[in-house]
Image 1 (cartoon, helix red, strand yellow):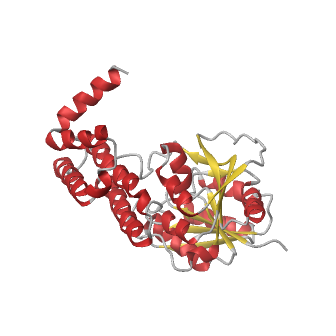
Image 2 (cartoon, helix red, strand yellow):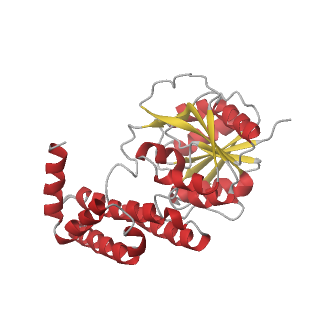
Length: 325
């Protein structure tokens, strides 16, 4: 018999989308699954919907708990998962019918411990069924380096929910509770433990883009958790010998300070404090990572210095450069 696969679905405030998500999981062509719906204290009709799905299909398990956030919901699901493999699906998203089957077969063929697919930003339409057996295998430092590729490609690697994992990878790893950007704080630890990751070119996961309550839809002080995750990753790299990646790691951290600064408009609560803190952090990262930042292009380093002197001057110069092409 094929291995049991646990699919963990955190549920909160998604009564309009939950049915579509769960139906896509119940329709999987791979039969040996358990679907763990974690009602994270949802204030709408989601708790009742979860129970209805459990009554309808024996493959569905339900956890009801007080709100603990996305990390807490995923961790709760991990605590009862019985499968040899684990996948995460967000409750406003949906997947192709052969999502699990494809990722499982890819793991068997490549002998990888993590498999992942491409995803598409969707608004409710069906996923295109484009068959392909093309895939790439990453391992070691090459795998970790994918976290610093072009934005779209890096996103494929860092997110938790387009992947199938051997459950044993989570034996000592859990998502950090009370924080957002939990994938940024966790995925690199999983990569360090796994020997291989196999990446199929197929789009099997639909990331729904019209849920305006998404935690990534606006800037707030909680977004500073992203910086914390990058700081932790840098310390981990220094302790475990990924020194070659440190220039890219520090660049990503410094660039984010500038991006966050300009996204922190006056409408954001505590904007003056946050902008001052972001400017301070950029200076701190430049000093702490000087050895590695010196390896970045001169234009990048001069940009950091100009921003430190005057964010307004930096923004004007950037606009002129963009207008000039």
